[in-house]
Amino acid sequence: MDLTPFRLEANGAGEDVGGVPLPVDADRSVYGPGAGTWRLDWAVRWAHTLGPIDLGISHLQGNLREPGFAEITDSRGRAALAPRYDAGGQTALDLQIAAGGLIWKLEALTADPQPGRYAAAAGGIEYGVGDYLAVFLEYAWDSRGRDATTSFGDDFFVGGRMFLPDGQLSAGAYFDRRTWNTALSVAVDWRLSSAITVGLEAGAFLGDSSLEPPLGRRQQARLAVTVSRYF
Image 1 (cartoon, rainbow, N blue to C red):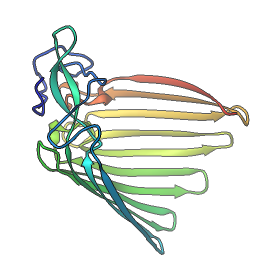
Image 2: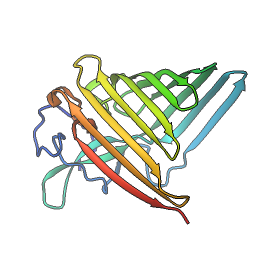
Image 3: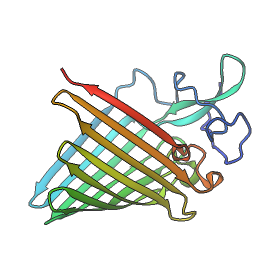
């Protein structure tokens, strides 16, 4: 088993499954040096509210929660990827400022897994129109570029949420700043009674998938229907 952090390439060798060069075996997690199942981790968070400002600062030391990937051999002798958890530190900041109907939001973090330290952030504004409608404008960034485990590493987001008498409707779109690849999503939650709700979520990808990070899930169209019963 090779525990070297795996660098994914857009046209990497191996089986192409859902846009990923190698299949991912989520049941065979591996750990980097210093990490492990029984490692004792610790985390601390400080939060403070000052008028319209909500501020939080946190730090985690131990197994980092977001995995990278390591190349392994599956039960059939084929190359595959396994989630790889590294030990390190992660420091995060969350900030929210309310000004009337406008809310400014920022979430940022820096972490130091074995492949090297990286930083990521997402921030923007939320504006409430009356009591039933909210619109969003945000930007997401990840310093790992094409090695990121998310497609939203240099993207703008535009969306909205409408509250209905018996439910909620939300829709949005991510636009890649470099390629203008677009991910669309819409979701509806509807309350049929005090105990039953129905949800519908749909998404679509528009653009050139070869320009996306290999682990970009947004390349795939999706449709999901859920029914929830509360007791």
